[in-house]
Image (tube, rainbow, N blue to C red; front, side, top):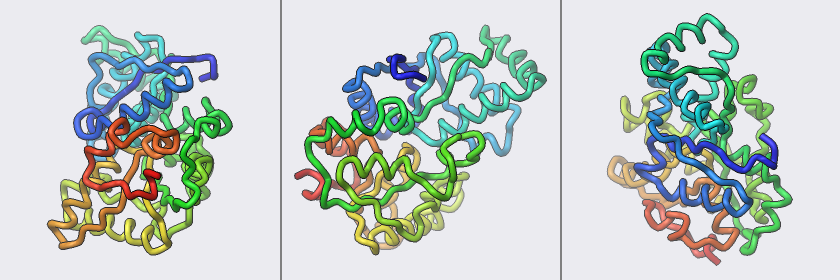
Amino acid sequence: MTEESKKYAYFLGCITPNRYPGIEAATKTILKEFGIETEEMMGASCCPAPGVFGSFDMNTWLPVAARNLAIAEEMDLEIVVTCNGCYGSLQEADHLLRANPKLKEKTNKILGEFGREFKGTTKVNHSLVVLHDVIGLDRLKEKITKPMDDVNVAVHYGCHFLKPREVRGHGSSEDTYILEDLAQITGAKTPEYKDKLMCCGAGGGNRTADAVQSLEWMRQKLVSAIEVGCDCMIHPCAFCHLQLDRGQEEMEKAFGIFLNFPILFFTQFLGLAMGLSVKELGLDAQVTTMPDKLLK
C-alpha cells in the first residue's frame, strides 16, 4: 500500500474489542494523526485462530478466513490488524488461496453458498508494518513530544508476526528490527534479553490446555526482561497482551508472585511518547499499571 492510500479495513478480531479496546483506540488515534482512516469490517468473524483451529481442521479454518478476506475485497480495501494470530490466519489463507487454484475453487464453492467469493484482490497488513513502512520512522519521530530517553524497553514479537518468514516478508525471524526501530525513535533503549523470541506462553492452545505451564513460560520471559533492567514490554499482538497483562494477575494466584511489569501494545507506547493520556490509550483498564517513568 502506498502512502497515498488513506483507508484500511480494520479487522478487529476477538481480543481487541472484547478485552482490550485501548489497543483499538490507540491504533486508530495514531493512524488518524497521519491521515489514515479505518473502516470496520461489518459481519467479520473470528480470524479464526491459526494454531488451535488451523492446525486441526484446515478444511473449516480456510473458508472462514477466506470469508473475512472476501468482506475486505467487497469494501475494496486492504486489511489492517492488531493481532498476530489474525495476521497469521488471514495472511496465510490469502497466500494459500493465491498459490493453489484448486484450493481456491474448493473454498469458493463453499463461500458461494453464502453469496461470497475470494478473488485475491486485498492485502493483509499488520498495523506495526503500516507505522514502520507506510507512515515511516521520520514522520513518527516528528510527533514525539515526551521522549523516553531513560526508558529500557523489552520488545516481544510473539509467534505469528515473524514466521514463516517467507510468507510474512519481514526479513530474518532471528535478527529483528521493526519493534526496536519504533521504540528507539522515542529515545528508548531496547536491551537484548534471554527469552526475547520466546512465545508469550499462551500459543497453540497452551493457555487453555495447561494454564500453569503457560504462566511459567510467561514468568520466565518477564523475569529475563526485568533482569537486564527493562522498565516495560511492548508487543504487536492482542492475544499476547491478554497473556502478558491479565496473566500476571493469574500468576499471582498460581505462584503467589505479582511482578506488575508494565505491558503495552506498541501503539500505546508510542501514544504516551506522543503526549496521549493513560485514559486515551486504555492503559487505565489493564491489570499492570504504568510507572511514573513512562508518564513523565
